[in-house]
Length: 120
Image (cartoon, rainbow, N blue to C red; front, side):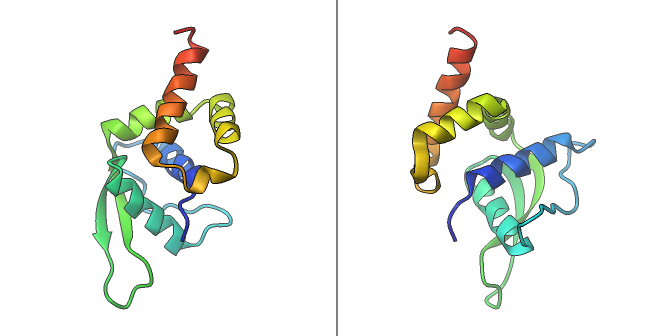
């Protein structure tokens, strides 16, 4: 399964919009099945964007996790990724390679574009 950075951003936006500090009990997105969402939450835990609870067994098809809360790093990433104009500009620069560009490179690009938008 390929990493979907648009889904990563959608998950962070959904968790941030929740009225409490803990993540909502279930994340549901049109066009995404539960396995895909749970796998991306698992990846986001590895990237330290979310605190997660990993679950699964030898009978599950993919590593899975449920979100507990967003981390400081998750908030920082989302602050850079939130503006639609910056997000689209970063995706345009990366092009078709978005699913395979290293996360730290993409994050650095978002941060550079955010700084540029502030005139820094």
